[in-house]
Length: 269
Image (cartoon, rainbow, N blue to C red):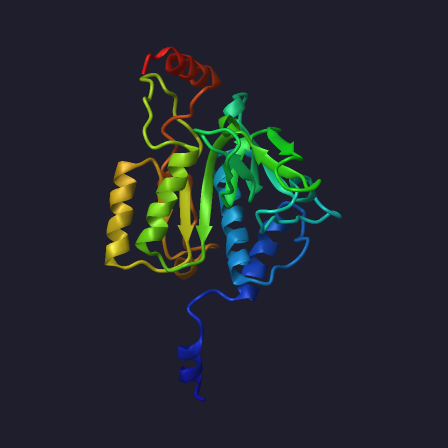
């Protein structure tokens, strides 16, 4: 087989070694190393996107710290199961506002905005500091279920190792609605928010149809959707810089949430 034929037969997706090198380089900046390597390329892609979210907050001026190392190594949580105390995460802080004193977690369950006791697990969550709770009655047996109440969720990101397709994009909007809501009455005096709007990060290239869907959804909702992260490169060519990212347009305060509940209870309908 000629060199040209070998080049043509290579996968268009990034190889594991490339991801390993990228992840090692990221953790080295925080004086850490990876706890264990993954088997699936999709896990490495998810780790890289997680690191990119951390990089976003670093670009925004937050003070970033590694937390909860396991045997002095960073342990990513590449599955929805498992107690959060057994996995590492990042903390980030800027100024004195509670909404800017946060933790960045991997595969942490979040309670629905509309119904207590039901959950979904985004790939990456940004939450208020020290707000994770646990339940012993969620699973059968004594297994611990870790989650965060919806009021303590700041924002989230979903990571998909797929070629974009319509159902994937529309399903993301359903998750946004369940966790953040799609429509908000934004006060006139709202201050600029540092956090990114919910993110959908996809490895594969789009076509004209999915490009059109992305443009339509992004115009209607407070979201971010990015395609072709493999092709553009996670490390150098497509830094998710704060200038190009759609920010959250509103963070509901606890007192506003309580007022809405009272109003709903008083309503005769």
